[in-house]
Image 1 (cartoon, rainbow, N blue to C red):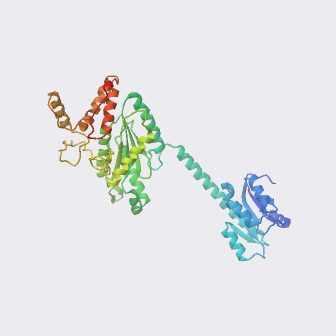
Image 2: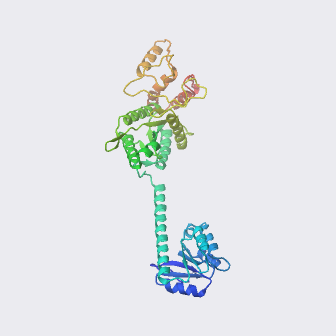
Image 3: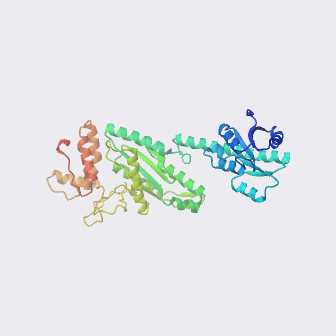
Length: 422
């Protein structure tokens, strides 16, 4: 067995005729390192122990295991390095065209007829070996690229963090929020009908839109915020210390920014809209990064199912008389405070206006009854309660968490807190 040199590829010559093996060796020895086998079984054993083989040249008719049998084993091998080897089948003058066609159908890379000419044999061998070497280099490059992407924290298209990095930040954010009794919110943003846009406008335009979205989502973010690309057409925004009210406000601002932005290449303007799912859980030991992502994804699906171009931040109970879960509740724009809905309105507002809160507090302070729904009022004062609690060294965290838990039970559920919360 010849030891492989640095500048030569290795060819395995398989033939039951010693004279044919000698003839092949004389023709190929200057350009290849040569391994020889007398039949398919011996060749198969050598392939298991000689991973440096780059090319197989096998006779079609041999005892024990013929050329077709060896070819079948090679193509069905579990080892990729063996399975993809080029195989040149050598046929005799007595072999008909049907045998040659069978060999090609079974996966032969090429075939040559005996007696072969030296120039033809060398040319065929060089061609197949070069193709195999190129294919192997491409596979190695792709493998390296995939490994780098798996360990990278950056999305190559947009330059944002990727989903893997976002999950790490969510886990860190949850730990911090739990230790310091702060808030944490997650937005998932999806480009509406992106696949349709991709088919109609092409890859270049679609990718330009994604880069444009990435820029808008990142603009004006705080240093502690994390913006990531989490899927083909989906982005995530992690907002530390942001409660549900603040997160919804950010989501509405993003909707307005996307609506007013001109997307496209050159003069071809493309209308783009987004759907947003908001997850702002009450922070406790049971909240996980996977749970926040699942919650945000579910709300994102509801927003998309409602036609897109909206924010979904609530999952209504199945027996609720409020609007259907498939209909996203839209929060008021930061520039225009929403007035309290009348009893005849289609649904209960999810947050009271500043005027409504002040009016309700004045009524309560004077001992009069307040007709305003309690849940929107409670949500409106939650940020103040959190700030007050932090100023009191978090002595009243149990009270606030109990209030948030009660609000999760539904808009019409009475707010009850245990006596020991105080």
